[in-house]
Structure formats: C-alpha cells, structure tokens
Amino acid sequence: MNSDAKYFRIGLFVISALLILLLGVLALGAKNWFEPKLTFETYFDGTIGGINVGSPVKFRGVPLGKVTRIDFTPNVYPEPPISSNNAPNKYRYILVEFEIKKSLIIGLLRGDLDDLQKDLNVGINRGMRIRVDMAGIAGGNYLEIDRLDPQVAPPPLEINWTPRHYYIPSANSAITQIVNSLNQTLRNLGKVDFDEIQKKMVSLIDQLDQNTQQFNVLVQRINHMDLAGTADNIRIITEELKDTSTRLKSDPSQIIWSAQPAPAKSLDNK
Image 1 (cartoon, rainbow, N blue to C red):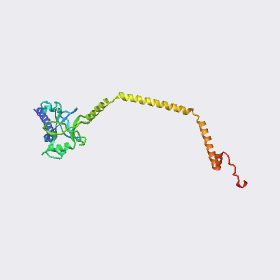
Image 2 (image 1 turned 90 degrees about the vertical axis):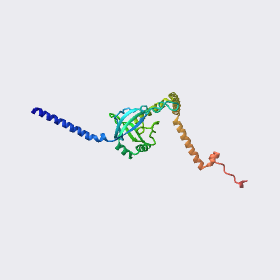
Image 3 (image 1 turned 180 degrees about the vertical axis):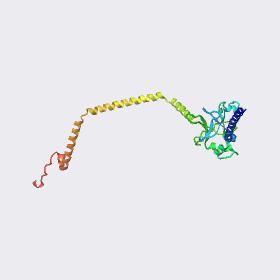
Image 4 (image 1 turned 120 degrees about the vertical axis):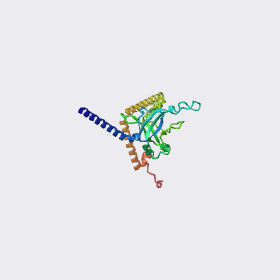
C-alpha cells in the first residue's frame, strides 16, 4: 500500500504540474484568442504564390492578423448571366479574406468603428493597398498593407458587387512587377527589326572601311612628300621676302625701276 500511495502522489504531482502549465499557456494566450477581430477581404488579378490560409498579414512588418480564406470570386459572388453587355471572365479574381485585430486596425486608421469603411476609403484614396510580399529567402510570403504614393498606386479592380466584409484594394507585388516588366521588355524586343539593324550595321562598317582606306592613301602621299626640301624652299622664300622688305624700306625705286633713276636735268642748261 505504501508503494501504491507513493506512485499515486507522483502521478498526481505530474498531472497537477501539467495542468498548471496548460493554464499558464491559456492565460497568456487568452488575450489574443478572445480579442475581437474584424474580417476584411481583397481581390487579386494575378498570382498570390506562397499565400495560404494562416499566412500573416502585416503593416510595414508589424503583425496585424492572418489569412482565413482563399477562394475565387465567382464562388462567393455569382456572375451575372452572360449577355452582350458583359464578358464572362471580366470579374474573375482570387478572393482573399483575412482577420485583423480590432484594436490594431483602429489604431492604424485613427478612426472608430462607427463607419470603418469610410475611414478605409479615405486611406484607399491616399494610396492604401495590400500586396504579396516576401519575408526573405528562407521565409514564406505574407500580405503587406502599405500606403503607396497616390500618384502611382494602381486603381482598385473593377467589380460589380458589394463586398461582404471591409474591403482593401490590392496591388501587384514587387516580384510580379519585375516579371511584368521583363515580359514587356521581351515583347518590345520582339518588335525590333534585327534584320534592318544588321543591314545598317553592315553599311556602317563598309563606310568606315572606305574612310579608312582613303585615310591610308592620304598618309602614304604625305609620307612620299619631300618635306625637307619643302621646308628649305619655304626658308629661302622667307629670306627673300625679308630682303625685299628691307630694300623697299631703304630705296623703293629699286623695286619700281630695278635701278636708281637718272638725276633730273636742270632747266638752266637749256
């Protein structure tokens, strides 16, 4: 009996310790579990790779909530009957619902719950968007709420229904923007007439070759010129010009008559 009582007390002690630990965990997490949350939704017209139910929702790195549902908009908002006035694929987006703690969204918007969507619309007009972001090379993707420049923020997707929950428009992620830019660059490259460019390059090379040949001929002619003799002739001509200038200053008549004129006869000798 003593042995059984000993084991009973040990088991009771272990169970009590586990219950205390469990109650401590519940007490620490009770605030987060029972804190009121609000449901939001957004729509994406592109890939949301890496986003799953339970993925975090953040504002500039601060955790706000998590993703609670991923679906397609036609499953939630049935499409109108196909007619000549609407296209069947025009409003088919990816629907993402997520929860945010009420206290955090109120602090983010600096408003109240009386007209939360109105406060959201003010933020949307100022560039508030939600996009897929990457936590890092080793981390998963998450939804990031951010305030973009209103001048460059993409307009909200066109919809023909009233959202069931609070609505925040989406924006393409940085990765999607890079991929779209690369695709646009490739499309532009596909429009380039490389054959015409090649012909112009060949023509330019031929012209450069002709100019090079003409330059070589000119260099050869210069090399065959008697530059030393030309320099001597220029020196002789220069000396003669200097001598002529000196004579002109001292006796101009020698330049005009090649000799001094005879003295004039006196009128008295007649």
